[in-house]
Image (cartoon, rainbow, N blue to C red; front, side, top):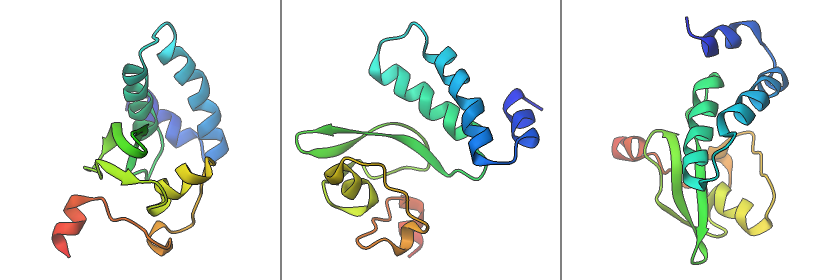
Length: 119
C-alpha cells in the first residue's frame, strides 16, 4: 500500500483529505516556477490522492477560450468556449462553480470521448 492509499483509508471527510493535500502540494511545488510543470504535478497529486475522482486538471485561457492543459484522467475536450458547459460558465463568472450533477447542468459538454463513442 502506498502513502496515498494509506492516507485515504485513514481519512474520511473531504476537508480532511484537502487538509492533507495542502502541505503535500506545497512541498511538491517548492522551488519550481514553471507553470506547466507545476500544473502537471498538481493534477497528478489531486487525481491520485482523492478517491472516486475521474479527472483532475487545468484549462488555460488563450485567445478568448479555454485550452486544455496538464491533466490526469480520460481524454478531455481540447477547447471550450467561454459560457459553454460548467468550465465555460465558471470562466465567464470567474468563480469556482460546484454542481451536484454535471449531467444536469444546462449546456453540459460530454468531453469524455470514450463515453461519446458509446452513445
